[in-house]
Amino acid sequence: MTKLAVMQPYWFPYIGYFQLLYSIDKFVFLDDVNFMKKGWINRNRFICSGQEKLITIPLVKSSQNKKINDIAVVFEDQWKRDIIKLISHSYSKSPYFNEVMNLVINSIDSKSSSISDFSAISIVAVMDYLGGFDVEISYSSEQGSIAFNGQNRIISMCEKSGCSTYINLMGGMHLYNKQEFLKRNISLLFLHPKIQEYPQHTRTFIPGLSIIDVLMMNSPQQVRAMLNNYDIA
Image (cartoon, rainbow, N blue to C red):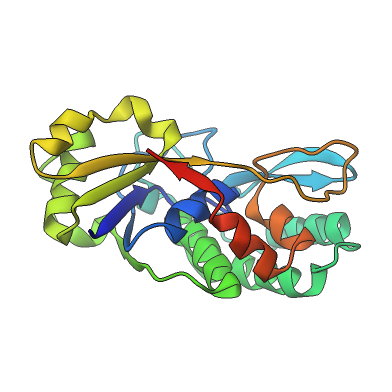
């Protein structure tokens, strides 16, 4: 049973994204669909001065009428220095600060021009840091012309990749119909993350922050254990 998942590339996404990656055999970055403003492609939540803060990667003329891989990251270094300084200051007393901060700096300093590549790099960097992933990664834009949209496109991807099971995060339950997948001999399952509490630089635990918050406070071994903490149905 070969398992596939398809997701837009998010910038240092929450742990549920990585639980999905940990549970599958093949993964496609959906980079040739329209950009969604106020989503997670170019921003995420961190802890800054004991409070939740949204950090955003600046983009050049972002629009919901443009594809993700057609939107460029602002070409200057000042915003990169500002974000690195902010994250560094906020997590300087974290137990795994040095290792994770190097990961953040290397990712932000990447020369990627598009936000799709920039965000994908952040995800792959985390996977390399944690280890234990055994998943084949590709990009939807590499698959040639688009014959279908939405659910039919996902079904087509499953058939082209030879996957008999498609797994999506629970947030996409309203997008897909299990019976339509079964008509093509494909099982549709949804992953329900269980967010495990861990020490944070806050008075009360805030779930679903960027994976960077998790990595700063937990060893790779502890995080890998968290990656198995989910339900699939």
